[in-house]
Image (cartoon, rainbow, N blue to C red; front, side, top):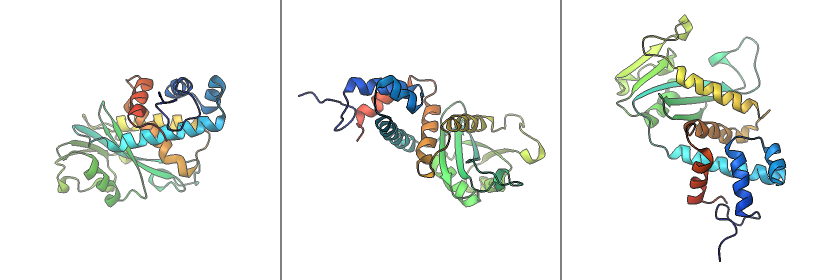
Length: 226
């Protein structure tokens, strides 16, 4: 007997309804509007969206290390701002580290601080040793050459330097802008679910030149939601 829904285990909705939901989710329509368009309960929409975000996050974490020319940077997410504290001193925010292959994929990870040990542990795990690394002048990137990354170029934002020849981090900064604009639309995210929303931004960015609906359908078909 053919299963009611090949994409969701023990589903209470038909495959046709799920595909309809997924087509709206793929083009990044907000949950309230999806509920209106599909006739699904808002809680059902939220549950399905969260399951898909988990699948997106798993897909992101499975990706192989980045190589070639890569840019590294950190950014701060969160609504609170303490007067007089900005940038790397911003309080009450979630710190995210990013690695971007130029004209390619990005990888993000939530980190506890911007110390050298935290940043370089991720770089050594996610960046091929023969890569060309571009960063700003933050001291957390000191010593990359000593651990095997022989081509490390920097721009010093503190000295109002944003491009030095081919060295810049405009690509990763463009991703930060994309992610923050997207997350701002959600009007508040619980800290417990921030990781999944961040990974959704990462996944969408990495598939920005593809048919997201088809990619998601193939991804979920391999491992149905549960």
